[in-house]
Length: 129
Image (cartoon, rainbow, N blue to C red; front, side):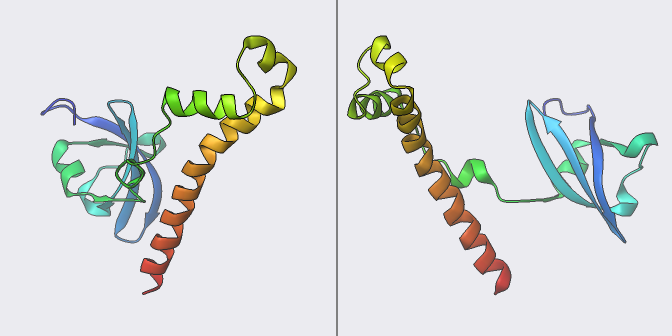
């Protein structure tokens, strides 16, 4: 949490018997945690106020993408190389060949898509075991 004694507003996403799934934003990043239903006071409109203790005790929800995808990097150098492979050397080349520009971008993004799909497969097999 940003400030030790402050509370962060969250929203109840789902409630099931003794657990609540809460979504909140901290320092511009969206998080979800599962908390015991009796540990939080649900306010009007499904809002809750989370303390640092609530957040620390909550169980993280979802795949921690930022930690799993840390090796996926698109650098300016890689993007430039991909553009050049598609014959995009100048702004005129880009105007004449928008499909080449699109193909270059898609080639770079495909590595990210592959990594995300691999993580989904790994998570699914872990859930089934």
